[in-house]
Length: 310
Image (cartoon, rainbow, N blue to C red; front, side, top):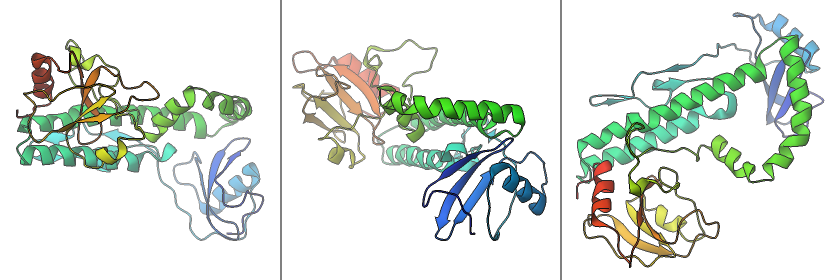
C-alpha cells in the first residue's frame, strides 16, 4: 500500500539494474501487487523487499501480504487414460507469464465437453474422444515451451540479463507499435489470445486429403459480420461464403445448414467452398463446390476423419 511514482490504474513494468518486476493495480491509494523473480529459493521478506525497493526505485508505506513460489513447468504424458481425462492444471502447469494458464484450461474443458456431448448423443463414435489428447496436448506443449523461454528471457535476475532487457525495451518501444500496426499485429494478437491454434485433422505423417488443404481447416472459423449468431448454437454446421451449394446427401440430419453468408470481405474464406464447422467453432473440412455440389467421396472422408456417425 502507498506505492508512489506509478501511473494510476495501470499495469506497470520496472526495469532495474538486476531485476524485472510487474506491478498490478489493486485499488486506490497506491494499492498494488508486485511480482518479480528473486533468484533465492527461500527469500526472507524484509531483505527481498529491501532489494526490490533499491533496485526498482519503488517506495511504499506498508505490506499486507508477502509470499514466494517456485516457477516450474510440468506436462502429463497423456491427457486421456480410458474414461479419465486431464484438463487445466491437472494436465499442464507452467510460468504465469502472459496469463495463459486459465485460458488453456478453459479451452481444454470446452473441447472435452463438446466431444463428450457428441459421443453420448450418438453423433460420433467413442474413438472421437482420442482427439482430446491429440489436439489439446500439443497446445499445452507449445504453450509451456513458449512461456518457459519467455519467462527466462524477461524475468531472470542478473546484471547481464538486465542490460539486454533494457536495450530490448528501448528498441521495442520504438519498433512494437509499428509492427503491430501491420499485418503482423492480428497474428501476434491471435497467438496471445490463443485463437491461432490449429488442430490437424489427420496425423502429421499421413498425406493431407483434398478437403484439408484449405488453410482455414483446423483454425477457428474467421468471424464475419453475419456468422456470429449462427456459431452461438455450438452445433455442427455447414457454411458457404458467396457460394450456392446444396446439402451433400451423406451429411447427417443433425448437421445444420448449409447456412449461406456473404463473401468474406477479408478473403479468408473462399467463395467456392462448403465449410464443415465443428461445435467449438473450428473448421473441420473445406469441401470444393462444383455446380452446387461437393464430391461424395470427399464428404464421406471428412466425416470419417472425425468419427462422425453418418
